[in-house]
Image (cartoon, rainbow, N blue to C red):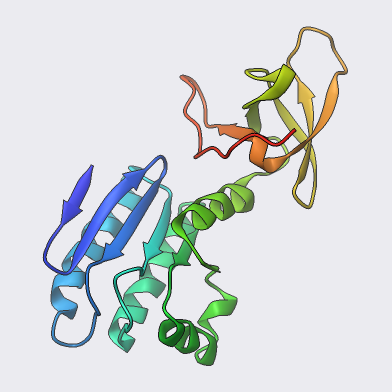
Length: 190
């Protein structure tokens, strides 16, 4: 799925929509961004995605109306058990988020990869199904029974009852049901 106009480009990454403004969003081009944001809200409400990553890599300024649209996207993602994450904000944009206290409600990450990992961390819960991505347990699935910071305690489906392992979040993928679909992966660190 891809959606774009002169102001904004949207692409799907697993269960997240990545919204990439192509230039500063102020009063003069707000209407074009509003059209795309409206379509993103529809997609979230229709279950086509759960999360939104706003990647500001091509911008240095977002206006107050645009911040209002971000708030609407945040409200919609939370209503659908998802999250809004901002990434690649310029120093100027980061200062706007800080002064307006929006950085308290919206995580701001340095890169899109970091935003994807953060969404996975924020949405992994006790009871989540995960699959090991590497090492001697690669491909083995299990259920998260405890979370300790960046570590997951997983009860493995290995055929032997009572097999538990503690894994770093980065070596697991969330399994969202059957057939298996997963969140974005990371490189393996045993």
